[in-house]
Figure (cartoon, rainbow over the protein chains, first blue to last red):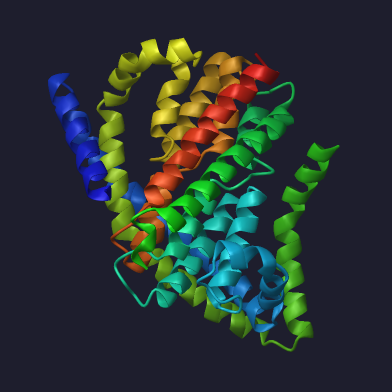
Amino acid sequence: MLNIVWLVLLAVGIVVAALTGNIEVVTEAALGAARDAVQVCFDLIGVMALWLGIMRIAERGGLIQGLARMLRPLTVRLFPGVPHNHPAMGAIILNLSANILGLGNAATPFGLKAMKGLQQLNEGREEASTAMCTFLALNTGCITLLPATMIGVRLSFHSANPVEIVGPCIFATSISMIVAVSLDYWFRRFSRWGRRN
Amino acid sequence: MLYSILTVVSRWAIPVLLLGIPLYGQWKKVPVYEAFVEGAEEGFTTAVKIIPFLVGMLVAISVFRASGALDYISRALTPLTSYLGIPSEILPLAVMRPLSGSAVLGLATELMRVYGPDSIVGRLASVMQGTTDTTFFILTIYFGGVGVKKYRYAPISGLSADLSGFLASLYICHRIFG
């Protein structure tokens, strides 16, 4: 799937650039993006170290496990394959909480840690586990209470009411969350893909 | 009322966590600094591991975007979108959204500058941006970081969430602001 998407993006980009006589932008874009990608990861190192450091303190104090126990009635339905006291569960909960509050750059570190835990439960297979698929569906379709970045952008362009988008965003993200969770449930229960493990 | 509560929460969430969790750890007799460093080290290795995946994805996206292919796609889709009542300015945003967060933020900012944040285009751009997610980016780094190569149905449910979020944004913006 990703192999095709990757190839199509590259091929279409290069062919279109060639046909419109813009071939030099390809080189510039490719080299620039490669440099930017490393820059993004370097920025991420600091944020990841900070949040996973704080999370480790909370874990050693038993705070995360307590949170996981509290949310167990919910998580046991969404992630039947993940024990509630597994470290992955704590990271999943923190990732989703950060997403809900619109704290984008705190969400990624917890998400990556959650995937690491889920991959342990998946015994290092090359194929995604059911729990991983559910986690990613929830992650992309997550309800957002505060679209902080866009409020910031609107503020900087002197919007008369920068926060008027909050209500519509809550509505639209609720819809996408319902779609993501139901589709995931459907795949898990009824499709050919779901029965594999 | 709700808005101001949410804004306060988002302003205070991080400082409160940064103070609260270490204090709680101290109370539970956790060696707080040592625990912090231990966790931070894990963060470092994970971040470095995703570099190759990010380079691959960003290069392809960037070449695609710089070539101007997006404009052709938008133009080809215009009859369909005008039938659905989608302003054609919004379309590149919707197409790029699952691929690249920074590209879309740039596009959305540009739309706000040109049309103003309180125009229908500006509002639609804001709501869409706040609603949908960079699904391919997330798939790449989340799966890439742990060595998963077969994604099963994850891309389908993720992209469907994006698409439904996009359509729901259109609907609600037309209802409230239209």
